[in-house]
Amino acid sequence: MITFWFPLDPIGHTTKGIHLTDRCLIMNPNQGNLTILHIAMLIITAVGLINHVIIIPVLLNVAGRDAWVSVLLIVIPYLLWIGLLLSIVKRTKQKPIIRWLQDHYGRMVARIASVMFAGQFLLLALVTLKDLADWTHASYLPKTPVLLISLVFWLLCILAAMTGIRSLAIVNGILLPFVVLLGFFVASSNLPNKDYSLLFPVFENGIVPVMNGMLYAGAGLFEIVILLNLQHRSKSPIRFRSIALTALFLLYMTFGPITGAIAEFGPTEAARQRYPAFEEWRLVTIGHYVEHVDFLVIYQWMSGAFVRISLYLFLVLEILAVRPTRTKGSWILLLSLTALMLFAMYGVGSDIQFLRLLNEGILPFSFAYYITISLVLFALVRLRTSRKGDVK
Image (cartoon, rainbow, N blue to C red; front, side, top):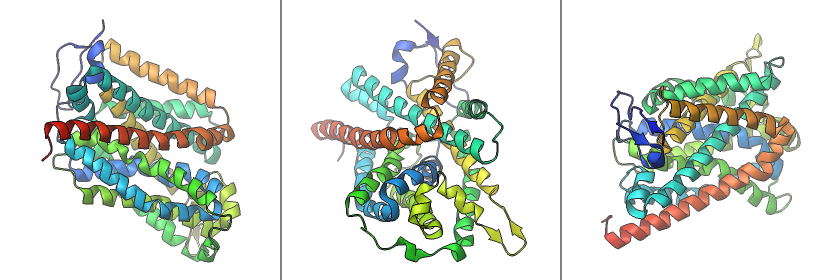
């Protein structure tokens, strides 16, 4: 049996002898070390990247001109689902979700939930890394192998995950404001290039493309389920208003580039582009003498991917109760994750195959996963709290 010795918080308090058989059941007791603003900003950066970048080409390909309608129509079910998440948060009293499941349903249920959460977060990290590496190789490092780009960035994210959640929140607090400002800059600078009449007519091909587009939009927006794994980090009670505002900002991060791409390039050309958000930057000019400012998107993209991958790696290690320190067991896990990353880079193949995998497999699976895990947890939490009267 392997014994892990690791600090349970960034300050340095340690545990004594946590066994491998119990690793998926131990959570960080250092609760309440982030404000709700920190949590909201982490969610905006981590979840915002998939909404602002990764799902855009898929959504345009599936729904075409009506992609922006799909985003609008998902607002009501999205907010209702946010209410469901907040009900889970309230009824579990913001305790670590895995620990709550262990206390009320036993180790087996807690371990199943641990594997489900950790597996999904690892998948999201790998998808982000693959998308970032392909874009980096195609846009400004064409002579650098994709595998080398992936390996260097992955190792940097592992090192960031090792520093802890508070360090990630601080770094994100520095990076995110500039990311948002650059987003507003590119949107406003391209106003002369936009023709919003290209957004119409809607429902040109019926309701089916719009419904399909709602599924892919939901695959990005519903990733806010990460809140369940961050709830115990909040110093104060999590309110509906705070999370609803975060959710609506994520919705805008999908709606903005979708409408911008269609208004600037037209629905047909926008659907053909692999990275519409990047192509929008190539149109930006400042006056008559400054152009080619698309290098600024490197900061945006790198910042979002860095925080997203680092946060998900941190959550994987925390859920499995293995904090990365100089122990044999923890380094074995980190090296195993690195080997899995290298295998994924080779196994997926070309960018065209990766995009097809996103379209036909990963995004539909993610949407189904978020709905299923939310409903199952809601049922389990409601059943136990209703029976015992834990929530007044």
